[in-house]
Amino acid sequence: MLNKDASAPARAEAESERLAGSSRQRWLVLAVVSGSLLLCGIDLTVLHVAVPSMSLDLQPSAAQLLWIVDVYSLALAALLVTCGTLGDRIGRRKMVLSGFFAFGLASAACAFSTSTVQLIAARAALGVAAAMIMASTVAIIRVVFTDDRERAFAIGVWTSAHSVGATIGPLLGGLVAEQWGWNAVFLVNIPVIVVILAVGLRVIPESKNPVPRRWDLASVVLSVTGLAGVVYALKQAGEHAGVNTVIVVTAVVGAALLYTFVRRQRRLAEPLLDFSLFAERRFSTATLCVIGCFGSYVALLFFLTQWLQQVGGYSPLRAGLALMPLAGANAVGAITAPWAANRWGNRWALTGSLSLFAIAFAAIAAVGDTAHYGLLLLPLLAAGYGAGIVMTLGADSIMSAAQPERSGEAAAIQETSFELGAGLGVAVLGTVLAVFYRTSLPSVPGLAPDQRAVAGESFSSAEEVMSHLPAPAAHAVLDAARQAYDHGFTAVAVIASIGLAGTAVVAAVLLRPRTATGEPT
Image (cartoon, rainbow, N blue to C red; front, side, top):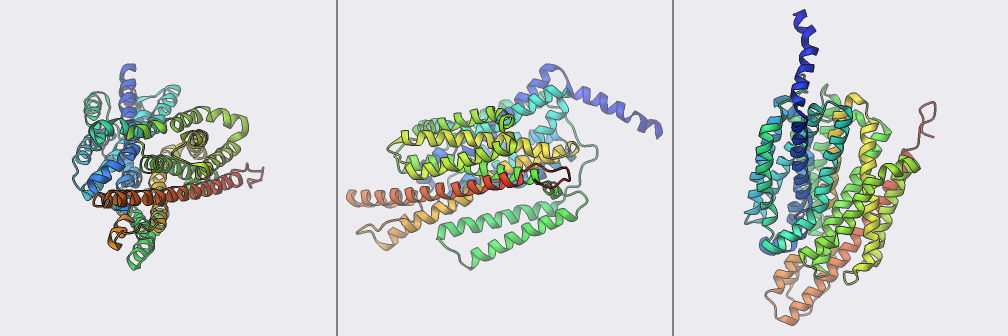
């Protein structure tokens, strides 16, 4: 028994060297996991420019439309930590390859959906598959890349792949949707997944945690159902421009489940999500910055594409191209973030970048005009640049605030923060837009009450009403819907600006350096 124990480190070292494999295999593994993460990022935003055409086909309500868009990121956020724990137990290679296969099937299900409910379910399945992929990829990189410098570079490539995918998603969606329809934005995933799966089967090594954490099913159920309940209530409140008994009860039950989830994590010896990490002030503040910033950024990508198409009459491709300055500035911000941190320190670089993003949103609300894209250019560049710095420095702060032995848990929370921010950003700001659209829709002479009620549900519903009206009345309804949507978009920009400004204040206050006694200065 003693000999067996004594040889364990040697066997572990030999296994690590075997898993590292040849140099060529290591970089193939990185290409596979980064390519899959690129797809996950693309699917976060690829549907944005295809929403108008998809809405005309499926006729979703305002709440259903929000579910279609962000159920993917919410499912991904809710299951990321769970899938990571399960992958440690059953094998990360099995988890990732199963995720690739499920991602392909879910993409096909999205493409061939013929109803709103089918598409929502398929998008949720796509989020589950993405969680299976993302949860274990960073652990695989840590196993395969044993050299510290190579591993740092590989993790940098892996991290940027998701952001790049989310950024190019609208452009890719515009190109594909304009040529082949909204269904095709999901079909492009399938041949890529086939290649990734074929290569992954050959090059990804199997690895497990020799002492895996306990997989707590009760915690999984509490977190998923609690989050679903709160978001459902939020979306229904937006669709009905108010609350009723069902909405209130659903919100209270969802909040109670989330509270129970947090309490349970604090009591468990091996929690699904270790909330003790949030006791570190820098960690919790950086997480808040990431959630607020990425949520606002993804919401801007989504609502800006709708605004340009539905109010400005842009084609899907033109709307995707209009977002390229935002995407380019975001990439520049991410690249120059280390320089900003060295120049001003993380505290003021984060505070200044959040403030810049807030000012950009305020400028979009003040001067936004789809007929004069030039007026939007400078605010879009500022928004992208500020968001790029915040997302990069926020993620780095999360990782650096945690102890080295807890880097895996910190990485899981970091990824969850991005996805949760994306889902909640669209959910919260989408609810704001739905309320303002419904309440600010002008009266149209000659429009029957039932027709006005339908037109008030969403912009696509107004277009459906228009198809049954004579030309003069149809034009009046279109003008009214555009005016209402424009008011809603302005309200979203104002509220996002206020939220980001508040987050900047929090960062400035809570990221103060500690004194020699350990207290904030």
